[in-house]
Amino acid sequence: MQALWNKIKNWMNTNNHLLWVSIIALVVLGLLGMYFIGPYEAVRHKFEPNIFFNKFWPFVLVGTAIMFAFSKLSKKWVIRISWILGIIGLLLMIKTIIDPTLIKGSARWVNIGPAYIDPFMMSLPAYIVLMSHWLSKEKQNKTWTTIGTSALTLFIIWAALVAPYVFMSQIYLLLFFILTFKARKDNSAAFKVGMIALISFVVLFVLAIWQLPHVHTRIDLMFHSQMYSQTWIARQALANSAIIGNTTESLHWLATLPDSISDYMFTSMIAKFGILMGVFVLALYGCLAKGLTNLIRNSKDRFSKLLTTGTLGLLAILVIAGLAVAFGPLGSAAYWPLIGFGGNAFLTWSVLLGFVLAINKK
Image (tube, rainbow, N blue to C red; front, side, top):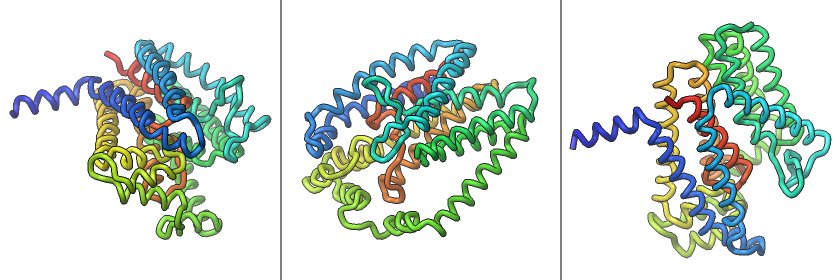
């Protein structure tokens, strides 16, 4: 038994197997959830029962192919493709300011033909790669690197706030801090700016709690949610869920749960498949995080460490935000990585994980 356990530990700690298995398992669970949960969302909107599954699986096929193809790239091509994606993303961000497409009160979308593109989500892989590349250079002008990375981050945050897309601006701000914190030994000037950004974020958040009425309302709803609000419905779905499978009550609340295949995907899966499904999903995210941590620990290259750290940081931010939505503190979140509905977001993670696997391949 001890020998078997040692083999399992060695497999988990020294290979990319854990990373690939957790990615594939999450993708399969996402498709499973979309197939069985989608009809409840479709009935609310009077759509065809399998419309969300039928829309999502092509993105899964394309995204998985992109992830595999990008995992074979060299470091040079990872950076080149990131430049292309980054420039396109910045141009589209400017378009959101000049000619916005409003969807549910948000102007962050860009309409190109039949497709709606979220340039802020699309640009995340490029941002993490290029920031990691700049901060890891051995021969660089520290001052100009700090100014350049700070200016880029401030532009994206400003564009996201104008969109408005406050949650995405917070993601970029926190990613900037995470990357500069990891690079603090090699680029202390950038780290100081990152610390200022983090402190500013905390101060502004505290001031918002004191000064903005709607923030007061959100905090109050966290503890005293109004009947039939989305937070209240989500809590009812969780409270009436079975350990395995579902109950009549959990399915009743699932049928009225808003955005059950995106913001509330985690809650929906528990309502449909049981509490153990929620534990299993979190365990898979833990395995994905463990795989990324293994890469950080085993890598001797500063660029790959920063890139993988940024990816791990983004995963942590989105999972924590998703849990905050599921249990009440937040009213909406960006996306559940790899399992939530959204072609833009799935392709984003496919590209990012492909880059991580490419940079860390032996």
